[in-house]
Amino acid sequence: MSFAASVLTLYPEMFPGALGLSLAGRALEAGTWSLEAIQIRDFATDRHRTVDDTPAGGGAGMVMRADVLARAIDHASPPGDERPRLLMSPRGKPLTQARVRELAAGPGVVILCGRFEGVDQRLIDARALEEVSIGDFILSGGEPAALVLLDAVVRLLPGVMGNAVSGEEESFENGLLEHPHYTRPQEFEGRPIPDVLISGNHKKIAEWRRAEAEKLTRERRPDLLGAPPQPLVK
Image (cartoon, rainbow, N blue to C red; front, side, top):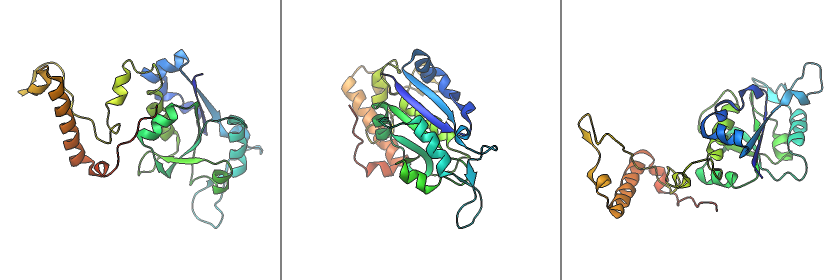
């Protein structure tokens, strides 16, 4: 069974976007995963296809309606659908590589892309949506965040990457940022490849890479050193 992604959005033309290219695009064409972009406005009941209304209690902006979104979600994810239901939201739990691996090991995802000021909280509660954030910043909508999440997940699906080991030796896989990389030419503008990497001593190479990863993490993301390594999902 392939990994199935359903995205609920006001802008279905944004998909597959970059996901139709490179590794994700080839996997999509091969049927390793599938993508369905669903227009939320199709589930509005008035002639203007209204999906939002003014916020209760007053304030700026508009809020996406619970009734319209519920119909859209129930269409995309009927009873018995075991896929997690995600809401891309800046107030959500930060996306981690561990969570990406969990999602990649499952049957797929249903993603709601928020717009305007947000989504009626009753919809979030009633449909058990998992709020997910890709960073401490605000986007114009959930679509770019959904593309990021799907790219992170799809590349880990079996057969998508040419070398499966590549996915195990990257930043965040072991609680550290990734070590520096080098390739030919052996010298570039007076900067040589570190001698250890051309020594042929695999033990020393592994030790050097670990030390460099720890150094980079201390310098750039010291917060990661206080957290336990993220387990790999088998």
